[in-house]
Amino acid sequence: MQIVLSVLAVLGGILLALLLLVLFLLAALLFVPFRYRIRAEKEAEIKADIRIHWLLHAAAVRIAYAAEGLQWTVRVFGIPIKRSGGKPEKEAETGEPEAAEGTAADKAPDTGAPEPAESKPDAAEPGGTKPEETKPNAAKPAVSETPIGKSDAPGADADTADGSEPEEAEPPKGSFVSRIRKKARELWETARCLYELFIRKKNLLRDYLKKRSVKKAWNTVWDATKWLLLHIAPQKLSGSVVFGSGDPAVTGQAAAVAGMLYPLYGERFSFLPDFEEPGLRGSVDCAGRIRLFGILVRAVRLYRDQNLRNVIREAQDVKEQLLAAVPEMKQALGKA
Image (cartoon, rainbow, N blue to C red; front, side, top):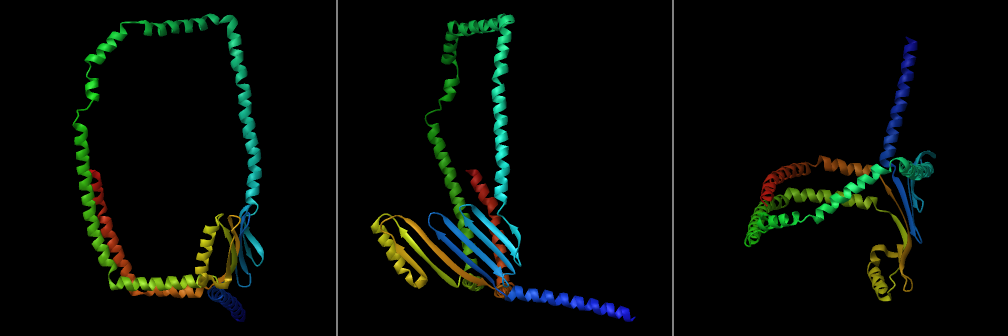
């Protein structure tokens, strides 16, 4: 009995330790922020470096872009788990011999095809020249009889003179105008039907959007979205931009616009006009953090908002009524 109790105590301790570890990881995931840093520059080429890490670099992701292409690496406790550095090179190495083999295989039949083609007429010349000469001779008189024969020409003239084909090909003078008028009437009726349907559905949408519940739900969603954008926005931002258009007047106007926007970026950014050389070059460095706890709280509030649920249900009803008009629209378009 004592042994069983000791075993149960050990199992209970292990389960408690696992439970505490899971709770610690969940708390760390919710309260420890994900930090990111973005660096980008443009001189002759565009280069970018994005780094995201969590819990003192316990998990880290790096994304780099340069002339070689896009490369990314995922590390856990400093150990790379996934990366995309060597895949393109291996594919390029394996693709080169395949292309070379393909070209060699293409060249082989090209060089060998004319040889049997030349050998066949050489073998046929001594023994089988007569049947080859009789075929073109038999074809030539057949070709010569068709233009020389005079009986075909008058027959064709008689067919073109007496036949009803030209009469059918030439429509009467008023048919083209009448078709245009008929088509115009059909298009007018179609446009009128579509306009009536649009007016009815427009009133439906207008009445739906004017409800207080819809406006309240829109304000709730907009407040949550605005908070999310401000939360994700970088807290540190710095950089410099040098721009030139080649025309001093245009460059001066752009510098004036940048000066008007100075309250938005302040001393963190510097815009320098280049009146001599056209181009755009510069660098940007920004850093920020994202904490999942605040995002989860806003998501739960939106999920538990009863007004928002009712508005979504009403939106589904409006959607069904709008889709019900699709067959009528198709029918109206079918008349055209």
